[in-house]
Length: 442
Ligand code: UGA
Image 1 (tube, protein in one colour):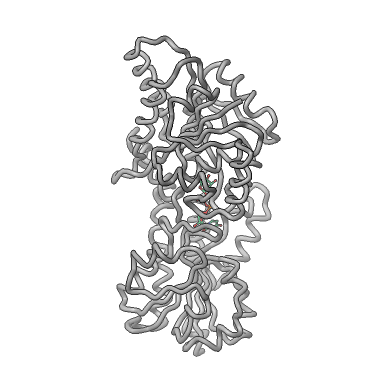
Image 2 (cartoon, helix red, strand yellow):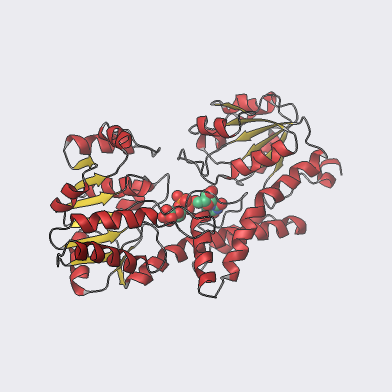
């Protein structure tokens, strides 16, 4: 069976590679010729460990073809996946321009029955919209061709994208009739993951609800961390104790300086916009988004309280990407933190193993290095923002020798406070509060 995947972004490329790995022939369609040229040479537009090697071998086996010829790809494929971007509008709602364009293109390319599957994260009711646009195109062409539109949201995480696409916890398939369901059953016949069949709108909402719930879980623990700090309680131990309850689960319960990325911030705001549109604004989610938006400011207060003024203080930021094992800095906490540090007139240096060039263009006044020790040379405080292995396991003994003042802020609660104290650091995590003045000078 052949599959066409439209959109060569993170989700589109990963989905294509996962299908190709399962033995399907995949046409990946995109309008960006430069991107296609690179992909044809196994150069990915994003960083994902080990993926370029897999892509290279799939290209050699001709399991995957990158093309801008949508007509041809649609003609040769039983399934047409739509995996284009749905970026946010100023209101927070998802912009469906690309989805609409692609639907029109599919409508004008259709020659016989096809199953059209929406992989992009789309607002509830988009499946219907896509169906309508395709029908319109067919009417214009005076063709009566049968097709189905299915919702099959993606749950992969950056940094473990291919693993998540190949071994998902569950596959959610939203379809409106038996034929579409049978087609999807055939497509996923070799998959070991449980498949949940729903209607289209339910599948669309499952995607938003899952991301919103995970984001809320993080904001819950982050807000509790603020309280813990006042109560003198260690939030990491509290998370551990809570997470051992299977009903709660330990994942996404790690306090930190906030979540970022291209998904949680965008999808939570989109769901908020949708809920307001129907007159039922989601209050818990609204609070979760608010907590995330102020988490960096709360964290910054700890730093500025310590120094009084940050003017001309040299601060080393460790980690720039929104999470480890990606080169993505979209909505990264580091960017908000650096902005605040610069507003307080601090001198900033930074380290990241993967994302330096783009950050340099955003903040040309900061010095970015690819050596974590250089980034904290002579600093008054070091702040761990992204828990890259290169940072967590750096030579902290040597780091202590390099800094001017040994203040260490762990924005992800990943370092061992005791060990750091042994090296001579004044360690401060999130929801721990070790560096309080009374502790320091008490
Ligand atoms: C997220 C979801 O986890 C995926 O299931 C989903 O498919 C994807 O969005 C999407 O919609 O495309 P992703 O954004 O790649 O995946 O990354 P996550 O691992 O979820 O991390 C998101 C943010 O939460 C990061 O900034 C991370 O540092 C933060 N986080 C995560 C915490 O602050 N605490 C935690 O305990 C876990």
